[in-house]
Length: 477
Image (cartoon, rainbow, N blue to C red; front, side, top):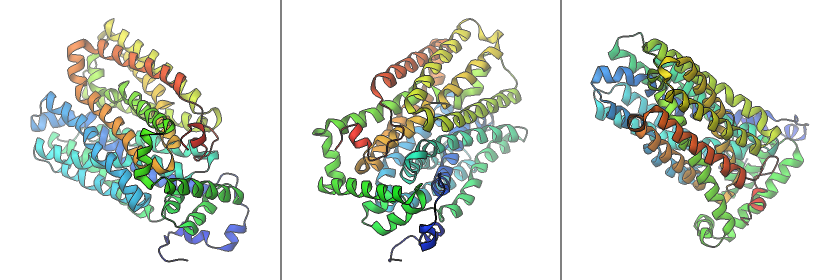
């Protein structure tokens, strides 16, 4: 093996002649293995974003934090994540996808520990800042890695893994909120944050066994290493050869255009590149602007407005929302490579519009007398989100970006996602205070309706196409 080659067990196995000669299974397990490990960062991301949903009840009482401070603390992690999102593209292009995942987990180790030990609001914000950088990194690197390691036959499924892992992390944070809620107030919320450190220990060992992205290896001129990974992550030897040929062709085209700087300069001259970036930015905007994080981070407040007064019941119903949201993504994962991206996105945005309008109408009609109706419509909303635009915004964005722009383009798209999420979460309490719960959810319903129109008018189907084929589809060559 040439110097500088990654000595992971996966690559070591691929260097054996017998492995290359053997007939591979129709659906290869190796890309699944790598995508799962990369997506574990998404568990940590989901946990750190959503843990304040229940912890805020106890922090406010223990430290005397106001509603305005809670609103800023809950939403600031999304603004802080801009730092990580914008750095992640640069880091992943220079250090590689694997080392970027290692760095991501370091932020998720330090941030929650700082918050768990915080003695006041300033320390909480400092810990939230560190965790926020990790959130930005995770949102960029997990879908990029999954898309680049996967063969076309399972790319939709594997690229959906980060989203289900995010929701798994959200659900775990709700379970943590519920499990520690019975402890003394000064201890309960600290353990909620500290529990988020545990998964980083297991992930640290797993990352060492991951293969590096074959596309990144090819970008760095490491053709032999890229071929070893492709041999183990493709459905057949001929597919591995075909993927390598396509990657090399795109890398050569990128080099001829002047590298990354030349690629970004195409914005002024290449309508296809402008269309791709506009599509990514719009899709990420609509994913968050329809208000999903208002439910994720303020579920107990929404339920309290519907007449639920018991803290135990509030946190228990929050777990129900988390289970519904996470389990619905399994539907998206099972159907995206069968039905395609476009049908699921249309069904998702349409159902979100209807459920949000119904939720708003329930509040307008006096939801405090029918809490069960509010719970039903919230569940319908999170299920509709998770079966389509939740996971597929990341899948679609990672697919259509050209290789020469994928790392930094994903960072820009993630920055849009986090800015919008930050605005939504940092204004929700003030918004419903000004226009009522009904008005807030009618606004979100209107945005969801606009997202349906956008998907219908602007998004072509990408199912079954190789990543390199996207350049033809969007005319970015």
